[in-house]
Image (cartoon, rainbow, N blue to C red; front, top):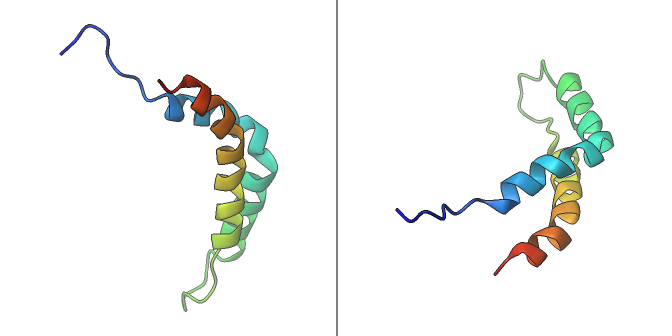
Length: 69
């Protein structure tokens, strides 16, 4: 392998953006707690999960594209 190891900048940037997306994370965790005992499988937290991931993506995108070569 070459001396210059490739580093996944997206993963690093996601970790730095997670503290900025605490509110959607709290909403997702609250939803998960609410549906914890759902045996039927009808309840889900997909919307809250996508809100959290979207928040991280909005934070990462401008920084990531400036890092790409």
